[in-house]
Length: 116
Image (tube, rainbow, N blue to C red; front, side):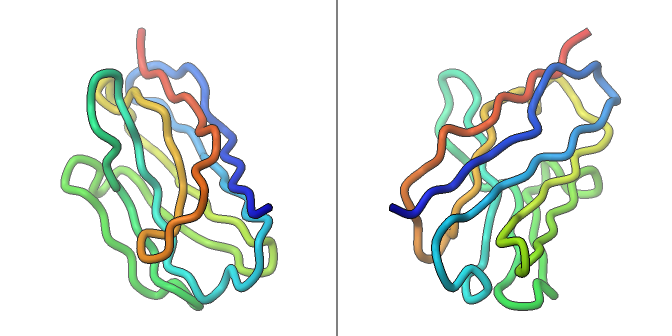
């Protein structure tokens, strides 16, 4: 069974940084574009960052995270990363990864809490 496993979340003060990781256990990782999503309490899940397939030469960000978050991929490790800098309280959410155009079963996510 294909699995997505997110990790790296935690409690951080405003202005701090975290690096999230997502491991994919299926095949053909490199042919998919990948994205990071987040879901805050009482809100719908939203896509905040996306990286193109294969070389990952194209990235896109929601305006709310642009300039603060960076998505990257490692095809050899079948992993996707999200570097989050200058974190704000409104970034608090459970973060998930998935393939936007070919969604897999959702992982358990990783909790990010930004609070002083």
